[in-house]
Image (cartoon, rainbow, N blue to C red; front, side, top):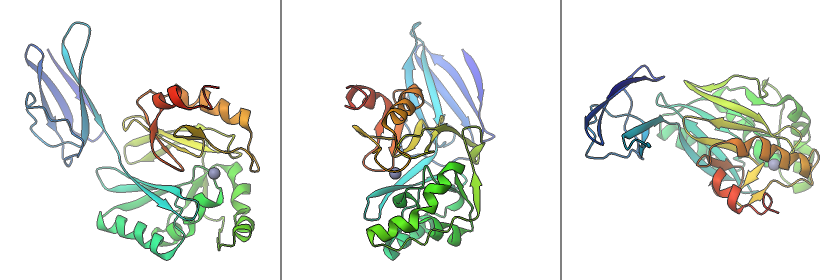
Amino acid sequence: MFFWSNYTNGGYLRYYQIAAGILQLVVNTPLKPFKNMVHSKEFGLESNVSAGVDLGEDTDTIQYLKIYIMLQIQQFVFNDFQENTYVLWNEQKECMLVDPGCYSSPEKQQLKSFIENNQLKPVLLVNTHCHIDHVLGNSFVMDTWKLPLHLHRNELQTYRETNRWADVFGIQANAVPSNLVFIDQDSELKLGQYRFNIFFTPGHSIASLSFYQAESNLVLAGDVLFQRSIGRTDLPGGNLNVLLNSIQTKLMTLPENCIVYSGHGSQTTIGEEKLYNPFLNP
Ligand SMILES: [Zn+2]
């Protein structure tokens, strides 16, 4: 048994069945080692690869390997609203910043130091939605790395209200809606070779987007879905039925082991929320 599997980074993977139930994996790729590599002694690995490896068994009892090449991700918790900011990067160290909420100087420095210390190159700035806690660091990121902001067109109104909300909370926002790129579910959003599926998931805000990256088995859900909870719907543009519909018809169609990175709180999985989220199991 032998087969080739081309993959997107220009390398290739070859599988050899060298004994019953044992495969030898040959990887020809310039990629770096990856921390959650499952490296069994049964597998000869000729080169390092940024990948997770699953060992499984099909109905004919032939062992198989599932190799998935993944983005790396770092979470930060920023500002008084405890908002999650995410940095994702590929093997080329190109990175994407999602909902930068850094507000204080130390928070901004923390983000900048992380990017510099890891020699990352910011190439993409995205908002899941534009509530104040998710946009407080936009200007800093746009100015520091000269990036446009990607957001849904209908979140622009939400963004424009940032400075008014800042007054309510007694903070300085300085949100300047300029240098914008509008995206929706039909847009192409890529970080290098990694393509994101964009889901239109309104209900928490008027035009929230969720970003699914299949190879990495993750979804950036903003404030649509949380571990054991869902986004609030009492702010302008919020609607509980719309939100539940977004979750059920978009997010819940993803694989059960897909990791959900939310705008607040801990990561979870689609499967866990299907079982345990009280809002989805009334
Ligand atoms: Zn929000």
